[in-house]
Length: 102
Image (cartoon, rainbow, N blue to C red; front, side, top):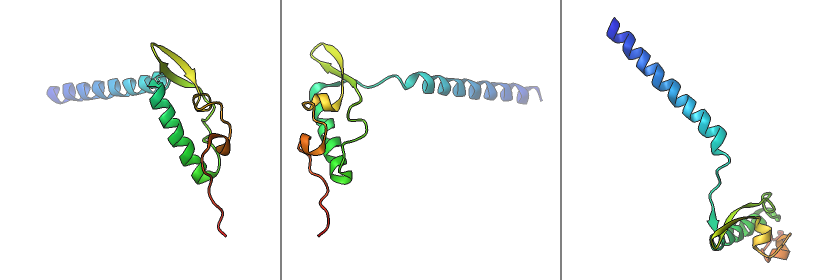
């Protein structure tokens, strides 16, 4: 019986540690955003904008939310709108919108 109780204590300890690690990663992991270089960020913005405009007729809801972008040796907070020349609409950004059935 002693071997079984020691095994149970080890298993319970490991489970508690894994749950604690998951909680910590959930709390503190949300603030960690990947940093993209400016070319990659612009490309991602174009792709997201074009897809959203084509499907919904509107820019993505996160279009004006700043994200970290590496420009040279520095990291700046820029939104997709800023990265693509301050465009604020599908037509202003040059993205096609869904065509209505005729």
